[in-house]
Image (tube, rainbow, N blue to C red):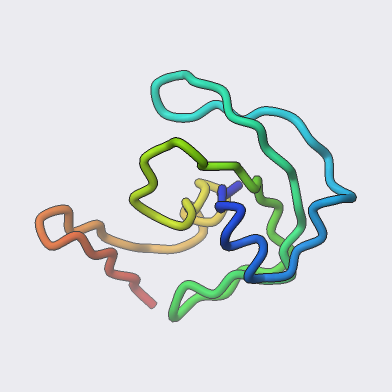
Length: 93
């Protein structure tokens, strides 16, 4: 399951009023408020994953280096290499 910010949820026009609400554990063991939504699909070129469950988290007051995180439920389905030096992810077909 991935996590995405409120900004991204608003850009995608996700209905956050009718979601399951709870908490998600973040790096370092902290808790943040989270809303679970189902996203029709996510495209990470050249791959697409349909019917993705995701958490929407409020990042106000938190450092935010990215708009979202891909979860292991998506990453485990594809072959990829992370080039940490150049900060890129290479996807294999």
